[in-house]
Length: 256
Image 1 (cartoon, one colour):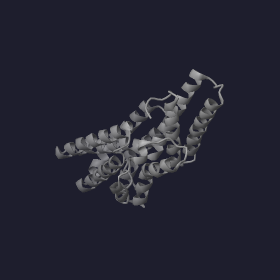
Image 2: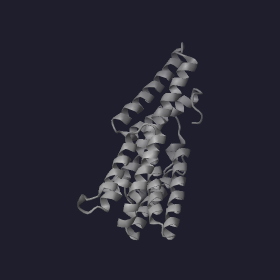
Image 3: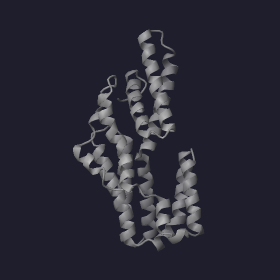
Image 4: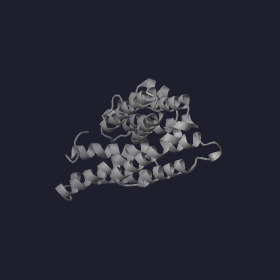
């Protein structure tokens, strides 16, 4: 089950290559070349990203988590539906501060090391798949997560298990930004903003060819949002990438 979850999380990366190449009217995209053969073979290794709810469940025999951990989980869940990024981050930090001392008392060193190894494995797999892609946001997230894991291990070596758990949870939180849902949502929002800017700048084009180009962009941007709402994250990402390139060609988006 965990291997299937990891495969789904990385499948969006793999899907971009062949599907971009096979789409007759799709722009040529460097993402089409981003997956090395060894990354394909690695997809069956690893597991889903461990987050606070999983750690609480694993350390609460019979579901008896206690009031502190129950409150921490409620704060973590509230962060997941908070639209304001800074408020969501503050909620997660509150959850980690509340949960970490209790988790430190319940988790042994081997369990914590295993959690950190799972995060490291995700970084290794995703970084390999993204090696040739121009996805700086994702690369930055992986770099930050790697640094946080280093800080977690250093804290553990000093005997500060509470800080080690907080840093491990922060690393997992940062890596959550590399999942298909997060990537699709960010790309869709970027494309919508760029399209709105293009409309303000150029208005409705008078020429037939320009009108067709704009309508195609509009269909892709709308289709990406619809796929995202339906939970079809790989399709949302493909549509958003196509729209992104067309927007760049119109001068509405930097890069390709």
